[in-house]
Length: 327
Image (cartoon, rainbow, N blue to C red; front, side, top):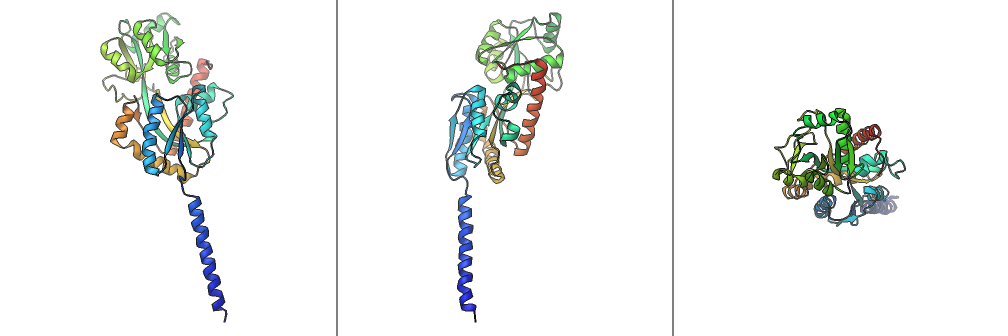
């Protein structure tokens, strides 16, 4: 009989199979080391603060440190590019903003990456409306007044923003295109000086950060023409949107998203998404993100992929129609 010989062989094969299965499972365990969270800007801004808030919660969820790494340069393209070109093992994610994700693919022909090809979308993180404002002493009191003033003297009205190719700049170009008015763009090195000069009347109009400008609106140094989102901001529910004030369909927000290199396993993306959504739902996390001037927002990876494609296509049309060139 062969049974006595066959049984040890069968047992050996079973043990071998168990060993292979266990080894494969251990090899596939994720995360197996700390996760890098690349922020494409220097420390201290809203992007950095938001990333650190999320990283703290993900570290708790995964039992591995999620370490924020600041890699500034190129208006965000250096850090985002580094994130997209990292090994797709799930141990690198990055924060994306409109500039390097939605604007640069059109504005920079030699860009080394394409978010539609090189990014695995994970989740939205936050959004923020902008503010269209005039000096408190201005004769312009409404969107209608603004349009009338621009049409009365084409090209004589200028608008200040924090720089060429920013969401603020493109909001101004979209406003021009949707109303048919002509205004001159004045780019500043950041929204803070643009806000200061708008308050002082050095420029007749500013498209600036809502959260930081609100105290000046409340004090009367600035007058709101409208916020730029599709709905009223949580920071200023009493201030109407540009769409409400006479330009239906006008919708421009800045946003932060989380992405990973293309090729990261779907199950890893799913877990990153789920834990990010869980973090964003926590009251203390929402409160901290609101404190940075941004409103928490989440999405599925599929929703984010569609959003990014739409944003790239949308701003490509605006950029080309306006003839915007990289500064």
